Length: 205
Image (cartoon, rainbow, N blue to C red):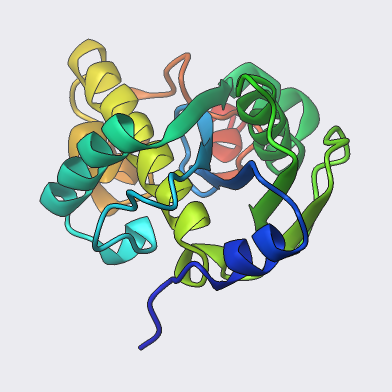
């Protein structure tokens, strides 16, 4: 099993890049809630130990690393809303969240390592797409952790307003409880109407 390392960043430092940001998004698959992205510039002298793809870490471990990152790294977190997801589609909305996170870093990064195989078209900074980047680059892994923790907390807060869907445990993903609640309780303003299971319930008449 490979764990992410600092090799991409080291190679870029050697080319003269100084402020290298890892960028990742979380929340493409859920039926509810925003998509969240984070951009992180690690301090090479103070990289928290144990950074990994957020999906491979326990919730407890993510919280510990989230705190460590907030103390040691430069970071920004941004969202694209449910309305934006429904309007422009989930891929474009996740790219919009990434663009917003990058734009919020000040001073700006001079190079971006972006998780996935596409570079968002609104990004004008030198960048490279890294497939499975959150398992290969510690900067991207750091971004995945901050984005995941942020989004999970958003869904916990929304679960208080809309009990029954289990968002505090399923984060809006289509678990059995969530799908059953959709059928029994109906669609909330936080559901993505363009997603098939939600769309089908809205238009089943």
